[in-house]
Image (tube, rainbow, N blue to C red; front, side, top):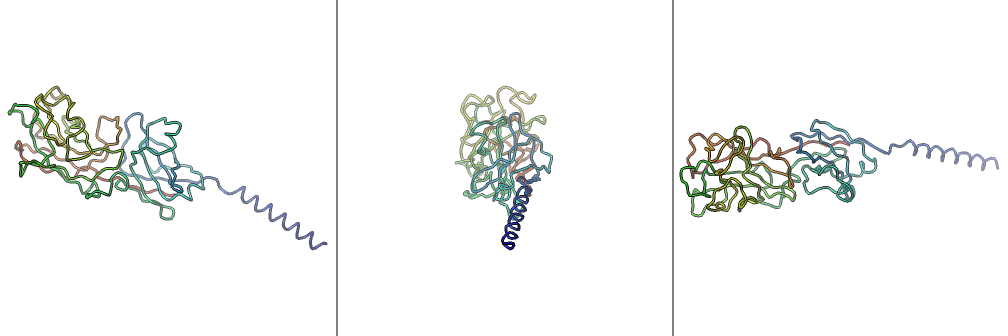
Length: 300
């Protein structure tokens, strides 16, 4: 009887010890993200981190500051079970079902290996089913011309991303990777230090989205069926049109879609300063832009 009693007491002590141990087990853990190259977003948008747990997204929180590293408190089970980290751009103040799922504008992603994930933008912004796999492999050509009017004296006031070296026919001047859903390309000309858009597009083989509605183009057509812009009517950045684009900087950026910022997003794979001696209707070759990839690490 005494032996049985001792066993019962030992069992009770062990049970209490295990229960106390479970009570003291942490329910949350820290997730630290350290990213390079991010810029502040336009108003009404935020960055949001996501853990992918059993194929499902779990938010780690939103942020607007681009100073890193940043640390977030996450449920320990989700933290330990996550296989991937994704960073998105989201409308601020989302509620309901929209707040529970990542937007299409996924910017960075990477798989966990142990307690760390290396993340970058090529993992998620670029659709790697295309022939060009990275933004860093982008290439670009353009000409100065104003095909949307009949005046031949203002040809240096337009930029078109095409290659007419062996025309006819002209061919696409841009070699760019296919982008994932939620992203578009946008051309820019920097005038007086202010970037002025040439329009957004998803393919270099066709006209950009504002080809028929551009406020700057002439009145004799919509252009040659490639991305580009004629700056012939009105003004922008304190410059009256038509103007001379020699000395201006031409840029191709990658933009979130939708996008409410009037300036280029941080990803700019191609750029070129128009030479002072550039000839009209003659192909000019773009160089590597300021930033073609964003990257960082995520630790748990």
